[in-house]
Amino acid sequence: MATSDSTQEQHDLVYRVAPGGSLQGDVRVPGDKSISHRAIMLGSLADGVTQVDGFLEGEDSLCTLQAFRDMGVHIERPDSGRVVIRGVGMHGLRAPAQPLYLGNSGTSMRLLAGLLSGQAFGSVLTGDSSLSKRPMKRVAEPLARMGANLTLQPGGLCPIRIEPAKLRAIEYRMPMASAQVKSCLMLAALYAEGETTLVEPAPCRDHTERMLQGFGYPVVVEGNIVRVRGGGTLRASTVDVPADISSAAFFLVGASICPGADLTLRHVGLNPTRIGVINILQGMGADIQVLRQYIAGGEPVADLRVRYADLRGIAIPEDQVPLAIDEFPALFVAAACAEGVTTLSGAEELRVKESDRIQTMADGLGVLGVAHEVKPDGIVIEGFGATGRFGSGSIDSHGDHRIAMAFTMASLRASGPLTILDCNNVATSFPGFAELVKRCGIPLAASHG
Image (cartoon, rainbow, N blue to C red; front, side, top):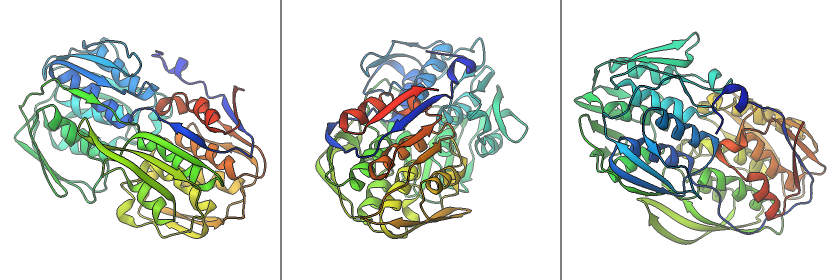
């Protein structure tokens, strides 16, 4: 695994996708990235040996894994999605010899900022140039209220320098729904004196709450209120990581917009705080069937069958926005293929992802001839309907993996070839993406330069 910025950042991978592809088959996308991150973190802090199955061997998750190795945790090398973690307990981490390099992973950066704020040693969190442009004040400010000693770079950016501090519990009303902010503060609360109370303005993913409980740590959840008391312990557990619904979303959209498509996606995580993409697509008329539902590792999972449907534009309900925040690049492609107008509002969070996903998607849609209007907190997309097609052209993904994968699916309804630039970071969340889409019927060629 690369550990230096210069090695990680090779922004020259290009996808060239011919029109006329299809989506057929029976596939399983990689493991859930959010759960993979948290399994490494909590397994490292637990007493005993934790086994993780289905771990996402993408660059983001591997950065989290390497960070804990750098802090003295023995973690066996991933083998076909299986990871064995020999936990060191809540106070067993050791000071890293050098800054912890987290690549492109905002989840690693923000969650570790909370977890490390309560340690007895100092640390520095750093990342690649893309991560270094993403805002960190929204975790640093509430952490400071808890007594954390953090120093950011000008503009509230990383690297983040963390010095030892004694944390105290707080009550914090989150200004916007963000699982990363909530999880950061929950992990800090493990080391704080007293009971920390977090109030969400709207539901967002609850993997941290579920996994803490799975590791035997008491967490109180009452509607939109989460309470965590410091000073407890974690017990080693077995974690079964389901397939990532954020990765499945591209295939859900692709099959929905491609005439003749018929695709089954196996073992997909259907956490109720993550199913906004399914709710929104079904609201647009998508043909998505849940073939079976069961529980794996405390998380609801299912097999999904999706086939082509004539989509219609909708006003996306604001209560679904935090439940689909990572899936909107794919949903914008669905909106472009729908009959009528789709409107999105209340999605300011998209402005501070790996790219400004509202503007970056809007720019790409514009290249392909899709009428749209950008709003400060969303977008209005005028769909071309069942008989229309995207144009052809060159799309700059700005190093954002979800932008690159979304426009790959747009090729299914394109009138000519698409060239998608700066695709290296697809490997952060979806290793093997290019190979899988080719196997399912999309004519994609990936090359450097």
